[in-house]
Image (tube, rainbow, N blue to C red):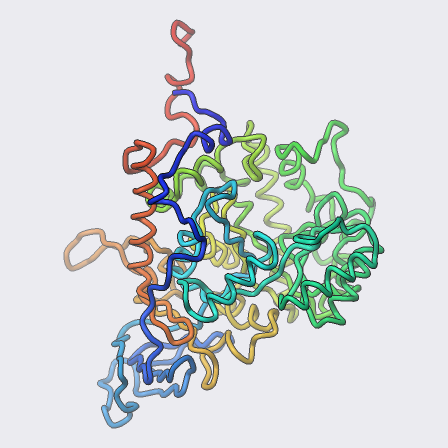
Length: 541
């Protein structure tokens, strides 16, 4: 079988108007509530601050706020009805379940159907919500006005979506290029007046960056940056953090700050940044060029960032395929939940960002495995010394699926050395602090927003039970293998969403898109299925 390029294939696919979202925000909401009095009974609570689980507890929600958290007994003993709060207008029996604060995705891109990924907005937001994500920091999508409209509709609960924190890309939507420091200040003042919460940077000439960060501070805006290699030699993370940048994504800019015997990474002389096989292959060799862990210079960089109260949002997950392409491209959820257009986008392509599998080798994967070890060592130690580390997914690229990738990020933080309670703390309380929203969200606390996640299994014992596909377990009574876990309910602003129904909606979207292409249900091939397909007729076997 021969496959067309991603761009050509996307151009040939025509989705009937009846199946296409004419309005990105036209899909409404699927939640129930809020209620005058919602009572969740008998759960074990993982509060979010790092405190150990406690239960059974009953939680009372009045409209969109947590009104009461009451411990109502002891594990293994009957609950005394006299200890329980009064009945509610709706009650959820959470006996045997675990309840957590709503998760916060600190690196979110709500791609839409006219993007390269070809994903309807409803597809993206329902996958987020089905995995317990109740707040998303949108760090790049369409222009600022579009993201703010999504934020408004989410705040009014008119669409099924996490609440949105708007961090438009620096310079996006302006009437001219940002060429001078005054241009930078004018753009920052413009987006601040629109009502955004922060700014996403990729880098800029030092005078422009300095002006933008200074103006952001004056306007009360937070900031984050992907320190792109095209600008990092001029301003690594030590420089930007000292100028007021409040957080960073990925790790670009950090190894460069850790260089001791060079200023520029060891690029091959035929390197071309626009060739993403070069870009990502050499990125996998970058951490080994930095100062070794716990050396004087390594410690100096860490201590400097800690002193600035700087936030690391590592987003380990986007690069997981770089260390094991076959495993990440064949995750079991892809055949059920990955749209055909998104699958096309993932395949090797010189035009689609992150599709750099032109000839990915064992050596590339070994480089990335070492890269992860050094990177994770820094992130874990930063957390151990009191630094703020958050969770972000950057989904929509590199076989990293919305919602599922966020849970993979949890597992990668566990691999880095985080205790499961520390993982949940990063996903909730630490992220809320970074957003400046810890008085409203991030922990289960009286007076805070009722953003909650109910899971039938213990996620501290096994983070895999948070996947929408759950996890397999042998039932010792029946001797049958069964699926357990998966989020049961996601509650945002006191509104109850059936997470499994959201996943069913996504499955229906995927099957409809497959049917429109005349594709069978089930797994889709990555490139070719067998060597027979590779060998031309009459060729050598």
